[in-house]
Length: 280
Image (cartoon, rainbow, N blue to C red):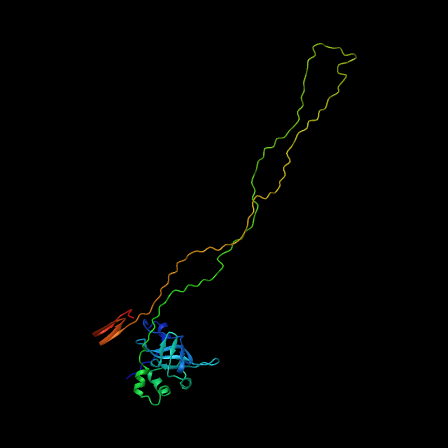
């Protein structure tokens, strides 16, 4: 039988080669071994590219100052909310596994030849081990994307505040006083003789100085307004629209099967593949 090359789950999702709805992505989970001893972290998975089904988990089992990635059949894993558990895998077995290399092509045969002997106990039947090691996990986690909005501050603008002089023409009415000469002439009813007077001999004149006021305009500055400058924070509501996805469970039924959904158990005979989206 022709062996199919396995792909990393991260590459499969990145290249949009497969709609991985319902496929559990274990990357980032802590891996525990025998006696719940921490043995590393799940970094990725090797999957069947035609179906997206996980075949192996890629574990980073290196220490503080070293890095080593190995692959373990998914059937050896037990999935829990707190991590991924390999109940029968010891640190010694991890140490003896071949290092996973990204530039190498992997098939089921590749793993079986190199690592199956390390994981299979001496008293375990080869066929029994393979049936258990490569079975689909009993526990699947369905993921859902949710919008996470972060805020960052940036310089949105600046305001420069100063002052300048603008001019206008202003008119003021000012009352100014001035002196005028007043000449009053009174006729003499009873003429009186003037002794020794000769007409034209006295040419004296009288000089009268007249005073007047004039406006002297000056300017004085007054405080007419005070301006206080500060800042305040206001909140605007912005609507952000983004597309999110969620993983739904696909159940493939072939032949006569019994499915238990909640408290209801049904029995049905299927001739064609029935894909039920959203069943949990």
